[in-house]
Image (cartoon, rainbow, N blue to C red; front, top):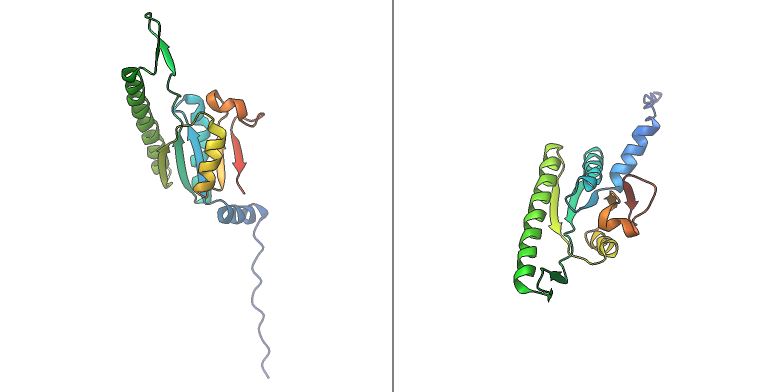
Length: 164
């Protein structure tokens, strides 16, 4: 009768490797909002690095500034002046395209799959969370400042929110 030869025991993976395997499985789609500012860039850089390290996809969402409800150009208030609103929309669209192109280029350089979109919202936090859930994102990476500051988690330069 032959005795079974025991297989060599595989060495246990170090805890950091185990954590990385778990994180890679858990976080596959990261959303990062931006307004194109330098401050928002901190969140974008962190999101790209996380996506690279975790092998995740990245979704960049540009939040344009809100259009003016009225403007005072020395002739009194012009409420919803069509030419002013149209000009503002054209400028916002150009800024969005430029900001998203920069993010996509940086992500591509890091080997990260990235898509981008623009999201117009008076209340950015609820809109971002709704969009993240609709896209089935696992993480939301935010640099709290500007328009996002009012409802953003405090105490961190970059906040990472786990979406369940």
